[in-house]
Image (cartoon, rainbow, N blue to C red; front, side, top):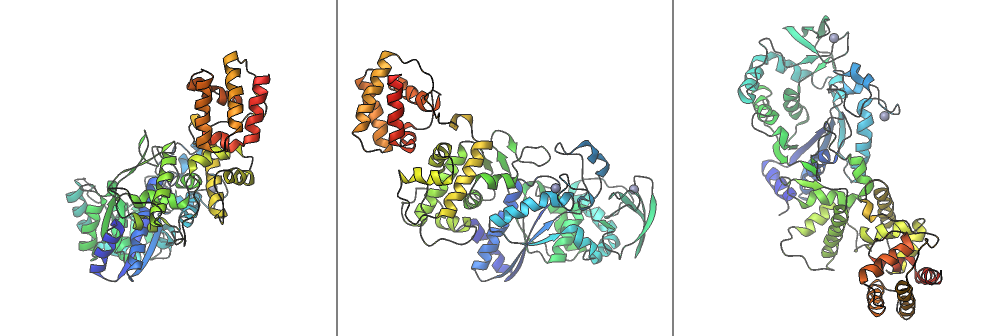
Length: 512
Ligand SMILES: [Zn+2]
Ligand SMILES: [Zn+2]
């Protein structure tokens, strides 16, 4: 069974009504690693719905979290905002309502592209609306108990008068007010800026819980029964360990069923992390990968397997692999030994339902060549038609792939794959044997059907006949068309250029 179905079955044993929560702090570009949390949870949500359960998917944006530091992508002037809630800091580009929205909006767009439609909550609003108020009272009444749990489980030492709540200082606006006197509904606090004040805890948004208390409080507030989280939260003594106990002992709430997922690694650079800059924003990933392929990446692996994300050549392999799953799903290809849950993986990879028949596939590998030859999408279609019959093709889908590969070529593709077809014959000084080869090649090309494999074979034969090495023959061909001595697979490349263009260029070359 697929891992999402396994999790759903376990949940069904506990009850038929479920709330699946995912949460992200929008303190920087939300990256592909964060995406795993959302996609993993949504897959379990789908599996529950497939079983007829009543399930709700929620996404909590931690917009009330303070800015922790001036990240490398921020201007110096953000120093003064460190410690303030993300929702009260100006947006870096000036076009969003605030700092949190600046990073949140592109991610919401990505979720939409991926067919993920959770109910979205913003922590800043939830606090303000007073939805945390009851939990705040419970936590402060049980401050000693919470302190003991955290100290025992995490091994941390907390200050003697520690209280599980940070007041937003009325003077500096930072979440740094420490409560030193508590007499419900009032609390007196002292801020690191020197200000001392008093707050009415019945008013929403006057402060927030530290993460270790915020998490279990929110389980109770939303009735969360399932939550997936990264292994950093799951280590021994971590927020999950303390959260479980705080939920049970303080909030009297049964903790949700957990699913721990592994990190996403950026090839050659290590685990993705917003704060280290080793990350690809989810909004970038969706510009280079079709939505279904991005989902596929996460559906294919068990959550406890780490994933290598590569924006280079492996991207092409990933898409080829997805296409193979699609062919297998539609019975056009036999499954490969060792392949697991291939049909379910395919189903769960679809952002918006399953198409009724296998779409015509143009592999990224071919499209990468075509996109560099064609001036626009229409011309790309013409070129593709030279190789593949495009009867009732899905234009939207093809166009999506075309646009994404253009973006990839421009921003991520390795240099080796890039080329530019020369409009004019590049200047060359051909030796006699090279001219002989080109004359032979033109003659042989003349008689063949314009097909990639035949073109490839004809180059070899012509080289052999004119007694030049195959290596030299291919180099010469690349020089003629792209002015470099290497290039894409010659057969498909020449086929895509069209026979007339190729023949004319060869003639020009040996006549020059
Ligand atoms: Zn902005
Ligand atoms: Zn202050």
